[in-house]
Length: 293
Ligand SMILES: [Zn+2]
Image (tube, rainbow, N blue to C red; front, side, top):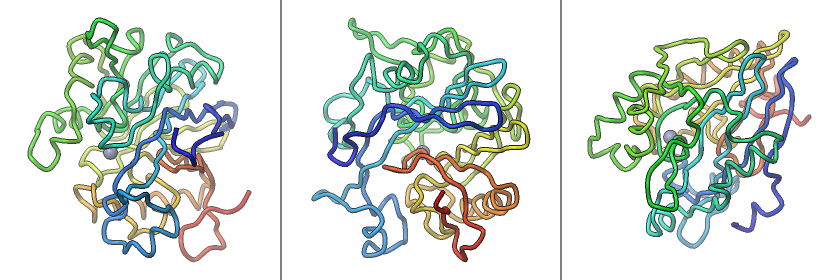
């Protein structure tokens, strides 16, 4: 594992009302720091997350396991085990486990991978849906959670098949076509309920049909942001990834989220932050920032 990740627990647990949620450390990737921070100059972002000699910064591939009243929900599945050596080197991936670190983290949280009832994809980029399938010892691509129904925005799946030159590298069809062939998708369009206590809300910009996940119980709210705000360093409105297809749409998605998050004191869950799994906005701060708990 990369140095700064040594000692990170495989899973960490907190509660939203009566629903327990587990942040699962499904591995690490190293992505170009400039691409992660768009128009923000390197002297500014480097203070938040230092880069290596290839200008890459360490990023978590955190997934979320939600103990909803009627279903065990897994949000996103990391990068999986299907990438070859070149792929794993380019993206600096380390997620070794049985068969990946995601499954190890599920067991660390007290469950078996077969206990997962619902797999919920925020979008279908390879570091979010790569673990939907895995390559077995015989080289066959198989569904990782064959007993689970899989949920995604219908138009995100359509978009993932668009395969134009700008998005092609991010969508790897073997991560989701097997789910289609197995008939395991449940599609949502726009805002949608997934199961009691868990719903999705469109947060477009990173991709046109990107969604975030809301967890609500007894008046408490958590939001799994996914790539609308990948790390705590991306909390300020203009700190937007260069990867985003529609950065001005991301800006408005974030503006709307932060307004509600402040009013309703949401717990914000960060998928790619190398250290901080979650936190709440500080109402005393002028810029969006987490308050120290
Ligand atoms: Zn993405």
